[in-house]
Length: 558
Image (cartoon, rainbow, N blue to C red):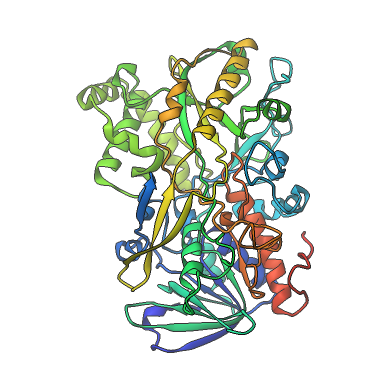
């Protein structure tokens, strides 16, 4: 059943076993897991079936110290949440990412990686990412033309979902008897029992001045990192600082993934034979090698984690004479000028400064057959429903760049709080204070130099990284990966949720999403957050059926 909350009589209360807030990757997976176990589930989605400017306006916020993209540009308030714009890239964390590293402040997860690994296969199924196999050697890649290196690794891969859009799936789930899906049902706050501290209701504000409530035995908050934090901060009707904030941890340690491209890389024949572009794996899923420094190298040089890949030459300069690159530059220039969606922000915002438009157009015309052939290959799977090439990635030009996705250290000064400004529904907007530290930037520079040096030493590429110090001043502002805000910890003094992702001091409230990550790693968070959502759904279901008590751990995985 799908219910538009705007049509519900003010003051109406609904009852359920479990209330899930959010329909993005974490919320959709959790709802599916709960429904498969027979739970009576209410799912609350703040937006509607598609993009809505009015709904998205409630996601606007205030940027304080540092720099951050507009908050409404890095979030999606609609069915399916961030899956509507997700590129589909999947990879598990490294063992090192969960370990306490004395050179990375506040590092270490309170659960072992073995616990996460139990749920990765289930997450793969939710995301349609094929088999849970992330070794190039076992995924149909060609054998390496050079011997293994003690410094550089290239066997780990990314894998791509089609990518999976979750709006149809959550809609289909709501056609059954166990799931009631409410749209335009933004949660303003949780009400709590003043004595025991348990949540007694999720308060929904579908239109100004109107409240309805959902009463459940258990609540599972999966509204995205920033919005989940706002809801907990706003649940302070008794004058407190929000739920789970006894020790001022709520909304701190905000992390994203610094991303950029540097250098001039010319692959050799051996480098091309290594297959550093997209490869269709044995099960028909697109995959790609990661270039990374080995664990011993990271430890010896006290580096944060980082994954690198070959990237196309800078499209903005029309001197490259490449019609495909000019098509790319013109497309993103147009999106940026029109401020259309998340493609106009973050790492894409640089294309608003593209110049030489006339020369770019001449490049496109001169290279029209190649541009046309690429356009046809790009459109075909979108029309036929086949797997989509993950991204524009021509590596056959005169040279390439080296792209990095880097780990950011958790820093309590990077945080979100409630601002005095309110949205149209009367809710306080978020304020973000965020920056990437000089130490994290230096780690990126060192890692890139070492990766480039090893590519050159092994004869895989000719490498010029004379511009790598530009990383020290790059404007890392992309907030699409929202991690650390509700970090997992054994004690409420150092985090917001416990090892079951249950909010400290609130026995019936759980959180699913990347906000609970204590550290960020250097791969996109989607696979891991869905794995954690599956785990959290098991524990929440058991709690709803009174089979576990707080802190006793989760159930079994399959």
